[in-house]
Length: 189
Length: 189
DNA sequence: AGGAACCGAATGAACGTTCGATTGGTTGAT
DNA sequence: ATCAACCAATCGAACGTTCATTCGGTTCCT
Image (cartoon, rainbow over all chains, first blue to last red):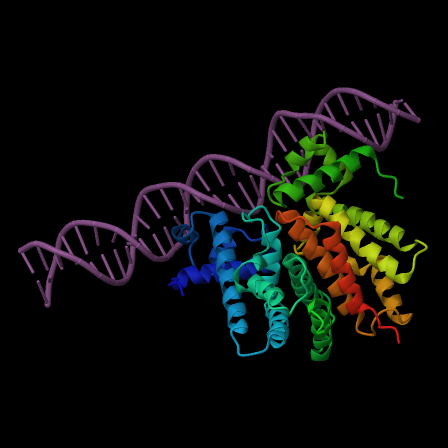
């Protein structure tokens, strides 16, 4: 893992919370400084400006998420079990970290986002779906289609859960993933 | 339909394009004024401020979308056909109106959004899914689950298509909807 | 005439960034 | 061991710019 100084981490962490709550506007550098217990000038010791701060925050969190996903995939489970676990855990991750959910959604759809591609493309995640096709576990369609179905359901259900006051029970979620699995899995002959 | 003056419509339309391209920041009132061929002061004749302008723009576009969806549902088609058409058309709508896609995603996840609920809840759309359950066309699960699967796939695939340089063929999309339908539909006994 | 629509320069506040000063720790020569 | 030199880290007041908003005036329509 990278060696990030405490101050730097505090700045990133504070920015995440603030942007999640107040949006990109609504969070001036002065607020970030106050909230992270740092002087305004100090931020510029670690980041060249607000834009770089936001970009680094994005990378910082994306890395966290990628590690999280990777750790879930390494298990000694069947493909289906990994599939289910991955979906449930991803949903859980976003639902319990709403500020990450908001930050991501705001960042990805903003001009700050240089790569202009959803973060879910990278890492072993997309690869996991691709290998599922190759191994004959998933239907042989464009992997991006599977990605859209899978991640779309994760994001949408997380948002519904966090935004709205609807609560999903474990059973609800299991129903959802099982349905997803049956949509995407290649039926056994 | 509302009677919206030409100037007002021009302001809304310009704001949509600019926010879609430059984000909420990045689009000062002065730019909106220039782009819509109106003096800065004039904007304040129609809107009390930037916030109200953004809020009205959201309502304005949501209404467009709701009308669009409603018009698709009224057809003399079977439930399944409506389901398919609706998904395809929604995908098409977002894919061919990227500025609407961006604006929505930015707005919904920003503090401007008072209602704090995805816009897809309203209108006949959610109702369409609910009635599908009641009529025995769709599986009897929480309608929000069906919504998440359905709209999640629409949004995610639109984003992949618009952001990334991946192009989906008609066949790709049909595969996706058919897959969705087969999971969500109640199997005939 | 009178009011609504419209204009755009002027205003003032908010904000990102800069900078000169201060602290703290490390190095290396004495 | 001591201290001088040095640099990174930190501070926060001050600066300059950007931007939303205002307002006094002009045009257009009735």
